[in-house]
Length: 80
Image (tube, rainbow, N blue to C red):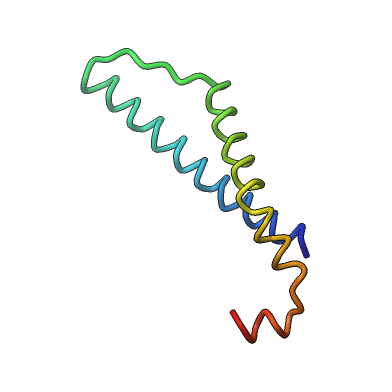
């Protein structure tokens, strides 16, 4: 059960990381095209950003996932 909650947390954070990378790439391309500013999108920075997003998902999801995994399902439905 703990693994399921952690996977959900990481997937949510990875989704946010991917949306952030795509949004940043679009803004960078727009600034380069319309503003005339030279921009560079590094693959290592993109991978680092996605890895940081996954790490945040693990760190932010570990405590709630452990707590939810230890709950009795009947009690969880009753009080949540």
